[in-house]
Image 1 (cartoon, rainbow, N blue to C red):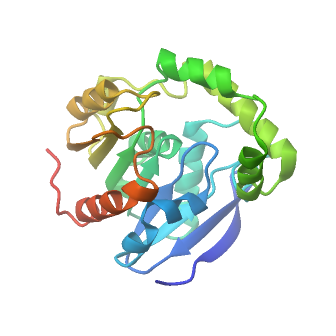
Image 2: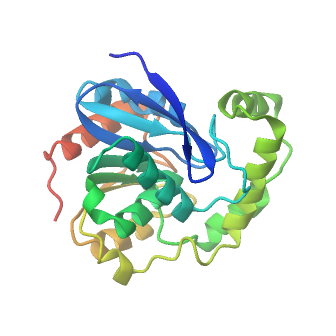
Length: 256
C-alpha cells in the first residue's frame, strides 16, 4: 500500500484538495455530502489501491477544499471533476461515487460520457424524493453532540463557517428542482457501463429508485445490498464493497 499524496490546485474559482493512492488505471473517487476524501479509508480503499490509482478529491466546500461562492450543486461538482481530470491530463478514467458523489457522476457521464469507461454509483438518486427533502430540512442546522461536532471539525478544515455553509447547502438541496432532475429519458442517453449499488433499507433513496435507474440506463448492473442503509459500503460492509467494485471496474461483472 502506497502513502497518500495530498495536493491542492485552483479549480473553477476554488482551491480543490485531492489525494492520490496506489498505482494502476486511474479511478476517480467522489465522496458523499459532508464527507471527504478520507471516507474511502472506511470503504476498502486498501483493496482498491492494490489494483488502481485512486484519485480522491474533497468536493468544493468539503474537507480541505474551499468554496468562495458559498453555493453547491452536483452539476458544479461535475464541472470541477472534469477540470481536475484535465489538470491531471487524464483523458479517460473509471469512477466511484457515493451519494452526492454518485449524483455528481450522473452529471459527469451526461456532460462528458467519453471521459468515463466504467462507474460504480452508490446510493444515488435521479431527483430528491419527498422523504429525502424532509430529512434534509429536519437535520440541517440541528444541535449536534460534541462527538458529532468533533468528527465534523476533524473532517472539514475551514472552521465553523464551513459547517454553516454545508447546512445552507443542505437546505438548498431540500428545495432543489433543477440540479437533480434526471428522468429515465435523460439517463437513457448515458452510454457508460454502470454498477448501481443500493441498500434495501436506504431511508433517503429507496431501492425502487435504483431499480428505475437500472431499467433506464442502457448498460447497467444492479447490486442491492441486503440490510444496507444509505451508503452500504463502510466498515463491516467494506470488504464486500471493495471486492465487488474491483471486479466490476476490471470488467469481471458485465452490465446489460
